[in-house]
Each structure stands twice: as structure tokens, then as C-alpha cells.
Image (tube, rainbow, N blue to C red; front, side, top):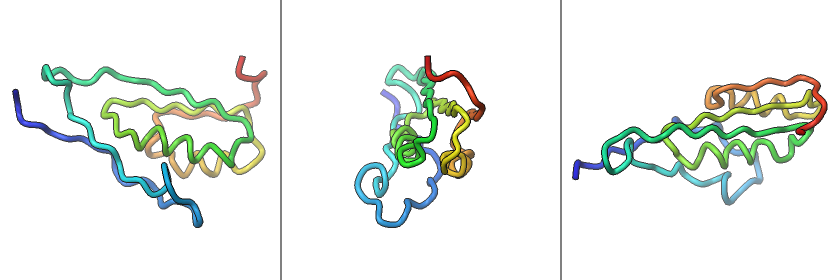
Length: 108
């Protein structure tokens, strides 16, 4: 068995004032760079739908990213929010693989 090499993502933005517990003050989880057989981790895509859920979207994004999975694709699809959702999504843009915001006909 080869020696363990760990991977993590760069530090996330600071948590909003007054927030504590997971995922606000938790450190990044670390996982091996490759599966035990030495192969790279398979890519996992997480699609986060959002529409005017600014009060939850930051917590959701942080929870996904703090898992520390090394081959993660985080995608945020916003339905044209008019609350603070876009501000929060932009805050995490460096860690989000893709995001868009446009009026749609709902999740389904």
C-alpha cells in the first residue's frame, strides 16, 4: 500500500456573524487523493437548485464543499432569485464549477 496523500480545497469565505456548528465553523474534511487501488476518485456532480432561498443556499454550498471530496463538480442552478441568493452564489463562485440564474418554470 502506498503512502497516503491528502487533498483539500482552499479555505472558504468566513462564516456570517452569529453562525456556528456545521457547516459554519467546521474544518475541511480530508480524503485520499486516490482510491486505495491508486486510481483517481470518480467525478461527482452535485446540482443545487435554488429560487429565493438565500437564507439556506450558503449553508448548502458550504456543506457540499466541506465534504472535501477531491473530484467534485458543484453546480448551482438558480431560477432568477430576487433575494440575496445571487450575492451568496457570487461569494462562492471560485469554488463552484458552474452556476446560472435565469427565470425558469420551476424545478420540474
